Amino acid sequence: MKEIGGYIEFETFHSDMLYDDGIKLNCGRNGFAYLIESRNIKKVRFPKMMCDSNDKVLSNYDLNVRYYSIGSDLKMEDITLDEDEWLYVVNYYGQLTDEYIMSLKKKYDRIILDNAQAYFHRPVKGIDTVYTCRKFFGVADGAILYTDAKLDRQLPVDESFGRMNFLLGRFERTASEFYGEYAANNDMFFDEPVKRMSRLTENILHGIDYGLIERKRTENFRIYHEAFASVNKLELNIPAGAFMYPLYIENGKAIRKKLQDMKIYIPTLWPNVLENCTKSDAEYDMAENILPLPCDQRYSHNEIKYVIEAINNV
Image (cartoon, rainbow, N blue to C red; front, side, top):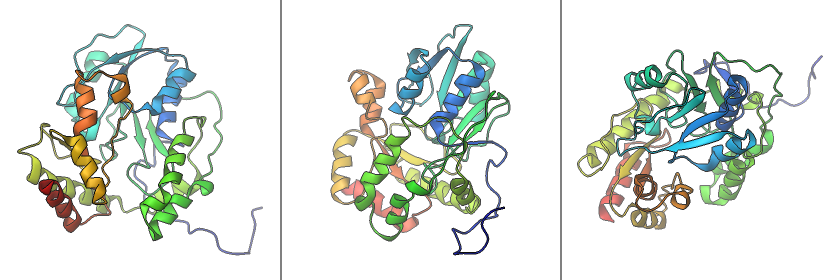
């Protein structure tokens, strides 16, 4: 029997959750780990332009890894796969269409789709797909995996209550005050084993207005695109529920610094690429000079237009 009486805990939400039928895990990289174990993967082709979040997974499972390049269209180069090799595909900024994804499935068969930057891109039937919750919503962890592969062991359930302070703090104060805790939370997942999603995170995900968020993100992306399409080195689709708007321009690195001085914080999403690639690699230039502009549900047209004006001024 559970406890009865006492003080009231965090509220329980009952709205529909997007991807409630998926496998709910503690973080995106462990969606990949789940597939390695359940599919018995030994060899994988991996994109050069990838954050170091999966490096620990690759080393933990002692995978044979070969890397491939992507082009300025954010699509992969033409490659060949060994018979027992898997292909890891990243849906950068939600720019891959279902038709393109299915063409990869038809050509390579054994593919894993990383939708960490494309939460509102619905899963394509028959393709192992990983979603990361904390890139789109105010949660400290969480991931969704679509696969028909099953692990032969029971997974422990994660707990999130000790990770919530940076989210609660930013709600009432500023991001800079809690950035250290945010970064520490990200680093913590390097050593986290595969677990089920925490009850707290799943509860929060049942309280989200997904339709509103998808519309806001799409519209904010559209406003950026109308302002920058003529100067952006990327030819972009407008994805549903966009992650960020990737503005690829000359001197992006210098512009990022000037925007920071104006309290407009534009991340470098793949800093490890600057260490692992040479300056002649396309990935190096993209990692350095793509400005991922915020277009999420926190912002109205006014904030988006303020960012546009600031970029035009600098």
